[in-house]
Image (cartoon, rainbow, N blue to C red; front, side, top):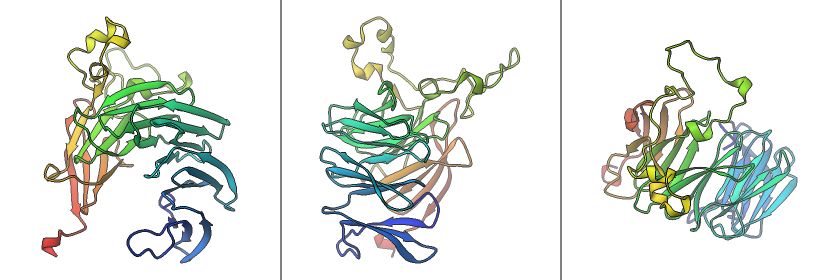
Length: 324
């Protein structure tokens, strides 16, 4: 779906697909008809849309089209990408795409607005999830191991932060930046949602846009509702070694930052679950979680103390098989 409007991209799937799996149908739900069609020689893995672009992901190639007339603009070669990993920033003026590179664990960031390509060696293992912030300046990546999330600058390719989801392997299913880049949501198949603070590493504001100095003795307020002297993401008790020893000698486990706040879906410890998460638009310190079992959660977290998140709302849209 194109944001929250009436335009959808439909691709055939399931056991008895209504449409071919190698076609993308651009559907206008207001007119109740197909307004565009794109055909390919292989199965479509994913589709991303903005107001200016339509991006179609195949296993070894990505096609970028102009939205208004569906003219082909760019073709990107990738390594095998069976899960259709691709991220398109929401800002149409920026037009930044992040996708798999030509090597395992590598990411290619295409900045079409400034005609630049950034290649990032993100992980040793294969990628499992990638996400861009709204204007495409920041990129979050996770590998199939699912223990680490890394945040990058898309223009320079510089690694800004390394965040640790946990010590045990997991499949990271979704990641989402807050609109002001102050927080990052990470959801895994273990049924856990992690909130990471990105204040120090992610805020990239020009000096003229910074708020005026506060009065003497008053706490400085920063985006996200947290005070400037609020604690950062937790670290290992041995993290002080990072300032004493060369980075090459300090284990990654010690250097990483752990999540600032956490939420576990009820009952997720019994079975793996599929979830997607995103920040709530009307409240800086709230986020939404939708699970494949038909449950919806709205959760909040303390932007100063962190810790366990609290549930603000809950709904179930699907009944379990034994209750039908």
